[in-house]
Length: 339
Image (tube, rainbow, N blue to C red; front, side, top):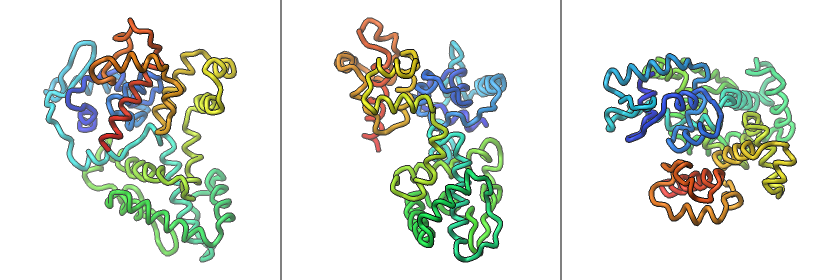
């Protein structure tokens, strides 16, 4: 666990223990989400929902006692050695994760992928096999897909997987391919696929999750794929349903005040929904929500907007939503320029 915790700290990062714990356990508040996004930690959101706060705090204190972290006032910590680098296999595992986007449904979505591969492989070859899934939540969508595409489904999926695997790291593509069962093929279990270095906690859990989330990140770039259309409803069930209702009203042209009245919610709650939408959607319409006057005032400030605090602009006529969205947009522009 120590390597994972140390890997969360970037060079120069000062992280508050309580907020870091809340992020790892999946406490979905605006402050936690913004903390995660601005420190590049959002992909680790909710990875350890059952983590014990006392044990986590003790672990941080032990890392400080052994000289790996520096304890700062108000329960902040930073790396003692700013040149610290996690081992490459662990680094790649962390880079593949996107638990904020795929979260709790990652396992269910991957089971659907394995199931549709099995069914498509067996279709019109034999009906004498033990299906990987029997629950209607899996069997009905696949049955409808078979009815829609019939004998073409196997060829369609083969072409889609060829594209998807070509866009994945070869090691990840290979291990995922070995997990599939089908005609004259028995897929390997997860424990058979995990390498020796990842047999210890938390890597024995994180590595398989990272394979699946790396796959879904690639699939997300292909909304025209049959596989995308099969899997997307699973992830929509993970999204904040109240937030999605708010989003739908804005997309229908409702004003902020109209959305508040329609939903019967306070402005702060609508703000939360909009900020989560901005973090989740690469096509979020920032100009529709950031007040033009706020843009002008904030653009005159010096320094990296991500490091600002709302209290720093208390003297300016800038609302919190415009401020937070200005920060998010600034970081997204930075990310795009680096990609």
